[in-house]
Length: 168
Image 1 (cartoon, rainbow, N blue to C red):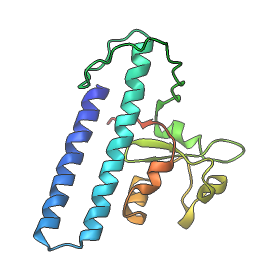
Image 2: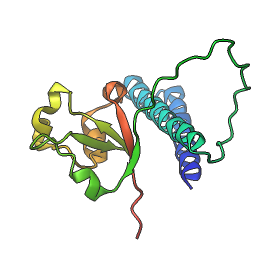
Image 3: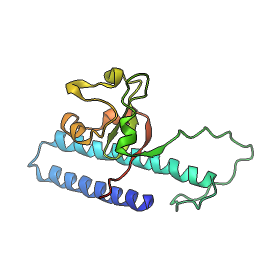
């Protein structure tokens, strides 16, 4: 199921990027705004790919079948490499995310477009609070889209998981 969600996300992102490229070609839009949007989509794609790579690696470590890979297998190195431990990632519900509000010593996490980021050590999120009354422990996708033209901000934040899809 997660692979299906991931592939849907990638497909939608690529359609949005293609639409933005057409806007640039038409010369009817502010190219800087369109380029910021493309940059944002690419960064979000990179974050999703990183997250799903981590999930795939974790699945392999517990013996689940590996998700298909497009990369050819590399020969094993002669000297074993010591792998770096994978950061812990998980799927958060809105209720679980609310516990990570940066208050009373709790870490501060925010969700943007389905990805949960750790903003605990970000000085702009001191005490779990940001500008304009925004607080950690919430899905801030709409607020992020209105405030940040590009997603460069997200590229420096650690990804700690994804936000569970709301079921009706």
